[in-house]
Image 1: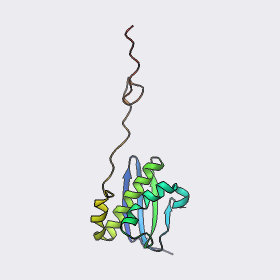
Image 2: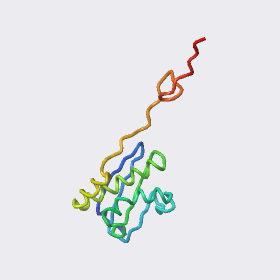
Image 3: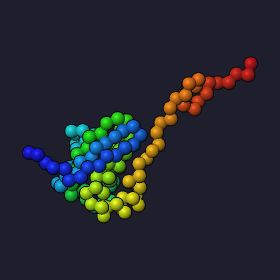
Image 4: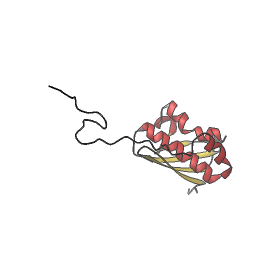
Length: 130
């Protein structure tokens, strides 16, 4: 059975990238072939489904997500961003409410790189006067 995608959205957070596919349905959430409940902890699952709650479309769409890279928190943020962008691609009237809640803005904070001559990104070796 070939199902067509209603809307597509790409979300990013830290080094995680999520491709989100929205389809008309009953509200199932699938992440990397697993259910959303088994992939994310309850706190992160509520973060992922925030855009659907804001637009009152939790039971309106089936959401299929392919996410790669980063850790579990970065992946949750990428999924949230991707769902918000897919909702806007499906229906432009969702944009003001999602924008007001800050879900369309990509969180660009990344881990700072390690510099040479230092043990970590900003930490310096202990200074010894004598």
